[in-house]
Every structure is written in C-alpha cells, then in structure tokens.
Image (cartoon, rainbow, N blue to C red; front, top):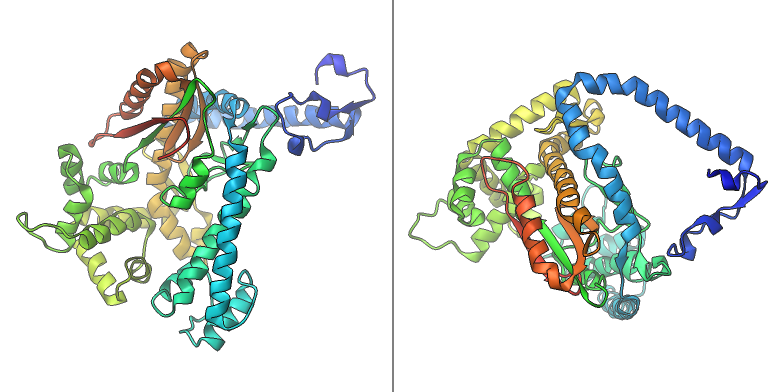
Length: 462
C-alpha cells in the first residue's frame, strides 16, 4: 500500500479504483488497514519463498526456462495493459439483443409445451426426463440423461428435441451475455475482463468477470453477441486468427505426410481427407456431405471422438461412423501412431509435454473411473498446449514490435483462443493488419505453413 494511505485507520478501497471501473466491480466497503497490510506482506513473502524454491528447478530445465522467459513472464504486463484497455461495448445493442432472445425463448417455450401436451420447467432435467422418456416414450439411455450428447442422439426421434436444444442455446447466450454484459460495462463504456494465465491445464488463457472465451464462434447467435463489441469513432477493430491451426500443428507434431503435403500445396485439407476415407479417386468430385464428414472427423479425432459421438454429429448409424473412423486411421497411420504413443506416455507418466516443453499434468489418468476421460484429454493436450504456446509468443512479439512503438495508434484489447483483437486508428488499419498477420504466420518454423486471417471493421464480426 502506498505510504500516503498508511496514516488512515481505515481505507475505503472503492475510492482507490480508477474512474473507469464499474460500480459492479467496486465490491469492497471499508477494510481495516492492519489486516490488509498483514495480508499483503504475507502474500509477498510467500511468493518470494516460492520463487526461491522453484527458480533453481526452472534454471535446470533449459526448454522450460526458455518458454518462461520467452512467453509466460513477458506476457504478464501485456495482459495488464489489455485489462486496462478494455473493449467498447454497444449497450443498446446488447439490450435489444436481450429482448430478441427472450422473445425467441417465449416462442420456443410455447412450442415445446404444445409438443409435450402441457407446461413444465424445461430447465429441470428431472421434469424434462419425465416428458421425454415417460410421456413421449423416447428411447432411454442408461442414466436417463438429458445432456447435450443424449439429446443429440435423439434428434431424429421427435421434433421437440431440436426445439429444446435451441431453447438451451439461446437461454445460455441470454443469461451469460445479453443480460449480464450490460451490468459489467464500466463508466468509460468499456468492459474490462480479467485474464488468467495459469488457470487452464494446457496453457490457454481464460477470462472472468466476464468470461469472453465461450462466446460461440460458428453460430449466428454468437455472431450477434460479438457484433455488440465495437470501435469508437475514428477507429476500427482488427481481428486476426489462425486458420486450422490445430490440424496444422497435428500435421507437424505427428509427421503426417498427407497433411503436410496438403497444407504445403495449399489444397483443401477436408477434401483430401474425404478422398482418403471414402476412397474417392482424383477425377471424382467430393460431395458436400463427404467433405462435411471429413471435416468433422479431422477436427474431432484428436479429441478422442467415439463412433457413438461421430454418429450423433453426422446423423448416421453407429456402424457407419465406425467405418469412417477405421478408414480414417487406416489412411493416416501417422495419426494412429501419435495417438498410441501419446496414450502410452500419458498412462506411464500422468503428464504430457508440448513441443516447447510445457508440462501438462494428467493426474486423473491414475483414477480408474476418470482414466478414459484423461486419455482423451492427453491426446489433444500437446496440440492445444502448443497452440497456446504459439499464441502467447505471438502476443509478446506483436506487443513489443508493433503495439508499444505505436501506442497512440493501436492497442491490443482481446484474446480468445486462436484470435487476437486490436483497436486502432482507421487510417492505419491496413498497415497494422498486414504486420500482425505476418508476425503470427512467422512466429516459428514448422513443417507446414501457419496461416493467419485478418478482418477489419467497426465491430467484432467474423
């Protein structure tokens, strides 16, 4: 605590917040200075003791030390700047969207009740299970589950299922974003999320108050939420994200020749995969459904998807889904080897590494009840963790080389998974977008090219 406050017996912490912090975030009333200073002192002492314990271990591991010095430590002040910058939000747009969402929810609720024959609490798993399994006589799963996977498996059984899934999706967006975000707008008109650097196992950043990481990307409703994040007058937003990054990293890490050849030639990875798993020759066109199936398998296989899960996603029989997975593995043997090797290492050690040395702990793999879940996580963890490492390093490079030397013209304001969002002067947007894209694409040398795509506009829209 600064010395100018030490003569006070009590400090009103709310008065110390900058003016742009919303009333919703001024959570403290009056706090006694003595316990506050005791806490702050103990916090500093414990942190230094931990530093003295762990620094020698870090110095002994050159790969991990480089990762810390190159990515993790320099990222901290960048995240602080991003939190302070915040992102401008269209309050009226969110409020209008909230009204639209709630109108849609009311319509869906009436339709669901009509199909059920009576009113019930759609949000109650017990009441929903009674309607679906006892009254409508839909096929039961062992636990009478009504979670998303269970409902997707019943999608063809009754029209009520699609409406329930839509109701859930809109309800979540309304409650988490359209209703909640206006309450978290500070007096400067911006939302200032808090980034957490160490809360995920794979190294991905997360955020809270509010959580901006889970806004759906590939749905129209999610897009409507994103469009409420805007640029002030005279400025624009630049969104730059990696294209198909996890597949590119898988190609590199698992040395998948077919993938590497496809990415290096600039061909369509999903079309090439479809030709493999459906045995389509070069002269025969790939159908939309075949490409969609290949795309689903490509993005799902490193999450350990089962034939049951793939069948639900593609809307095909389970034996057909199994044939697709078997053909995929037979046509891409390097993936099967990567999965088998990663499983064995994870089971033997209860952790895996990213190529840059980040260690991802998997203690659940020693628990027989959780082992299958942990094994599925282990398969994807080195890829997702590598993506997180690259993103952290890219943010550091962009901040040092582009943003800080031009602080009056551009600032980094958001990071969501494989995407970084900037706010900048409209007149300089094309130049900055090209520089950022180049930095992200050349952040490291792999056996396949990294590709980034940029979008410039007055709102966060993809």
